[in-house]
Every structure is written in structure tokens, then in C-alpha cells.
Image 1 (tube, each protein chain N blue to C red):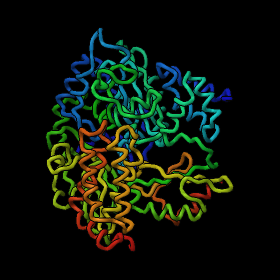
Image 2: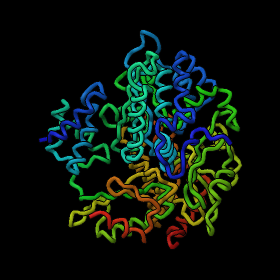
Image 3: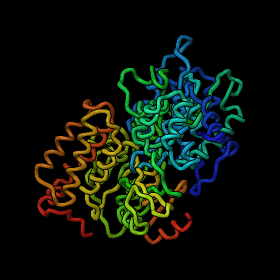
Image 4: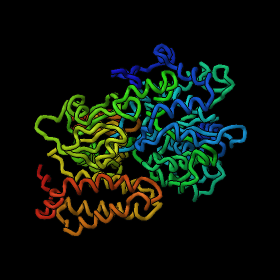
Amino acid sequence: MLSPEELREIESEFPHYPNKQAVCIDAMKIVQKHRGWVSDENLKDIAELLGMSVDELDGVATFYNLIFRKPVGRHVIMVCDSVSCWVMGYERLRKELKNRLGIQMGETTADGRFTLLPIVCLGACDRAPAMTVDEDLHLNVDPQKLDGVLEKYK
Amino acid sequence: MEKVLTKNIQPDLPYVDVKAYEATGGYQGLRKALGMTPAEVVEVVKQSNLRGRGGAGFPTGMKWSFVPMGADAPRPKYLVANADEMEPGTFKDRLLMEGDPHQLVEGMAVAAYAIQADVAYIFLRGEYLFSAERLRRAIAEAYENHYLGKNILGSGYSLEMYIHLSAGRYMCGEETGLLNALEGKRANPRTKPPYPQVSGLFGKPTIVQNVETLCNVPHIVKNGADWFKSLSYTQDGGTKIYGASGKVKRPGLWELPMGTTIREILEVHAGGMQDGVRFRGLLPGGASTDFLVEEHLDVKMDFTEVAKVGSRMGTGTMIILDNQTCPVGMVRNLEHFFAQESCGWCTPCWSGLNWAEKALTALEEGQGQPADLEHLSFICNLCAPGNTFCALAPGAVEPLQSALKYFREDFDRHIAEKRCPWSSQ
């Protein structure tokens, strides 16, 4: 069941669009903000609320890379793998992250602390390589700075 | 030179509130526009030679002129700011939204008035959270000061403005993919015609316009088309936010006259190459533009001049290739991006780009065969304009076809040496 808070936030989007389906991406993002990801059950609840079929909504959910249909760790690291960051040392940074966390891209650490994902260009090309942890953007990240960055996220 | 778009933007990006924005002439463009007829606003934008800054360079005023006007026009009409900045190597719209968000709000209000739109959306990248925070604040202030909402400044014109924070995918930057995303659907492209100006968002007349384009609009209305044209070194009016990334001394963004040479941007503003590396080539305006090389450095960066040498100005933010970076590896990175971001709607794109990535990966891993290069050329032709629904695939093969032209010996070396010659570096 969607929480009253989630319902309230989703319903506050309704006046912005002429129909309810248009709110579906916002709705999934709202649920994900509260729960970390969108489960099958959440999907059913949202579809019902918006008058969509579950398949239709899942088709939308799985199109968009920022909607998570599997559980993620407490913190999500997204490393930019696009061209400017690649030129400036993305591969070294990815290797270092995989080694420190002991996981591959797309995996979550055993303690549930971090999920590691690639992301396309973060629009911070003049301060490459770039990555985000949750809502924070980290710039000019070299392997030496990594410990300091990761330390902040428990 | 005169700074237009960035005059209020400080390096540490303090918030420019409505009072600070008004103090440097802010919202005077909107005030003036509301005293003109919508047709007059369209006309001055047409006369200014403003061309779309999202990459395609379509004349802005002409685009607006296709929107049905008058009492019989379908309603509501929509204006959408394409703030889905996701072209790799592009970071200019972020600066405009974080550094001076009211400028975008005003630009949208003027553009919306010109086409008599009822609702405006900012379609914003999901990762641009700081931009979202700044824009929400600016929109709230604009409502409080009657620059948005019902009966704007007593003119009788009303406009609502909302932010849609996206959930990812490069396809959302494509105009019709974006409209599908805003409707809560997969961001596949739509068949054109009908064009969005006639049948766009929710089937209603819609203009989709890049952030930088919209930011220019109030200045054009306020100061006139001749003033705007005088800012430029060439036929394409105005200033341009240029950028550079890669191994240059001072990567960054600079607002300069439209038509500034590549050499000036690279050598003066970006400070030239870092010590110990040499220039080999560049993508002039994002990942989906053809490589240019040393012989092109004196080309003027505008839509017309860059096209003459076989590339596109695109977004105007250059990505620099240096001699210590493998051109084949760089193109592999680009094709990985495009293959991943293909929406899968049409075959040349989803199939061709995946095969391109596979062939480039084989080359990088020392498994390349001479036939792979023929296959890559075949894919470039397969994905040419006209063979696909949207511009993703034609854009995707621009860096590939030009790399095959300018860096052919590097591709050949990967095959002859059965390894990436840069791999030990």
C-alpha cells in the first residue's frame, strides 16, 4: 500500500497535467524516494491509482534508468562513463571503486551500504571525472580522493 | 565583449534572486513583449537570426511561426524548455539554470506569449537537482511578482509553469521522445509529420526549445534584432556559450561572439593543451558531431561554417582528443553510449550501433580484422539520415565516420599489432 505521504505527493502532481498517466514517472520517483526502489507491489498500487495497466506502467518503468525495479543499497554511486570523463580517467576510477567495494558494476555490497552503477554524462565535463553519490555530485574525483568521498556515506 | 547570457553569473554561482535579476534589466523583455502583439514578437525573433542552441540550429522564429494562432487554434497550447542536457561533453545549460534561473523563466514567458501558450514545462534532467532547486525558487518568485500565473502584469495573458524532473535516457532530449516522456510514456520518437508545432504534447500545438535558446529571447525583444545580430561575427546572430573538456589547461565555459574560431576557444580561453600532450582532434559540439582536426582550427564556430567542413557546431561544447588518448577507444566509448541509449524503436539504430560497439571492442582487444572496418563503414551508411525515425543514429555515426577518415592509420595499427597501441600507457 502507498503511504499517505506518498499519496499526497503523487496527488499534488495531478493539477500539472491533463491526465493521470502523465504523472506516472513522477509517481514512481516519489515512491522510490521513500523506499529506495519500486517493487511489483508498488507498481500495482501506482497503476491502480493512475488508471493504467500494470504491464503498461512496467513498460514505462523499465525504459528509464533512474527508476530502480530491484532493491539498491543505502547509497547509490553513479560513475559517469561518457566521453569527457573517459578521456580524463573514468576507467581508473571505475577499477578503483570496484576494488574498494569488492563488487562489479550493477552490484550491491554485502552489507547493503553501496550500489555501484554507471551513468551517462553528468554535465560536469570541465571537472572530470565526475560521479554522484545519492543526490551529491562529486567532481575531479581521482582514486586518492575516493576514501574521503565514500567515508561520508555510512 | 558584451556578456549577455552570463552577465549575472558569478564563478561561485550565488543565487540571483528576482530583485537582483531585475536590477540588471531582468523582466524588461517580458514587459516589452506584453505590449507587442504575439506576431510582432515572433517577427523580431525571426529577424534576429536566432538559431536553436540545442544542436540542430533550426531558426527559432520560423519554428514559432508554424503554431496555429487566433481564436480557432486548438487549446491548450504548450511551451516546453528542453533542459534534458545529456549530450556527452555538454554542460552549458546547467550553468544557465544554476547561475541565472530567472533568465530562463523570463525567456519561457516571452516565448510562451509569442505562441499564446497556456502551460509551460521545464523538462529537466533527473540528475540536475541543484538546477531544479534554483528553478523552483525562481518560479515561485516569478509567480509572487506577477511574471507568471493569471493575468501577467495586468496584460490579460496567463501562463502556468511546471518542472518535470526526468527519470533518465538520452532519447528524452529528442523533441518527440521528450513529449512522450512528458505524457508518461516510453520516450520513443514519433513520426513526423505531424510536427509538434501543430500536434505535440497531448496532441496540442507545442514548441520545444533548448534552454540557451530561450535565454536569448528576452534580450532580443528588449534590445532588437539588429543589436542581436551585431553581437555575432557571422550570419548566425548572438553570442554563444562555448565550452571545452578533455586534456586542456583550463576546461570550462565561455560566452563569446557567435563565430569565434575554434583556435581562439582552444588556445586562448581553454589555455591550450596540458603540458606533455599534443592536440589530435576534437568533437566540436558534443558526442554526435564529426571529428575535426588541426587543419580546421581556424574555422569559425557557428552552424554554417562548421557544416562547411563536414561537421556540426552542435551544442558548441568541444571535446578534445589528445595524442595520449586512443581515438579508437574514444569512438568505442561514444558508440557504447549511443548503443545503450538507442530506444530500440528502429532497426538500423538498435542493431547497427550494437554491432559498431562490438567491432570497436574487438579492435580495442586485439581481435580486429580488416573486414571490421568495412563493416563499420557499412553501419555509417545504414544509419545515415533518412533511414531512421529520429536523429540519434545519424548523430551516433558522425564521430565514427569521421574517425575512420582522419584516424584510419590508428584503426589499421590496432589490426596489424593485434592490440591497442595505447593500452600500455
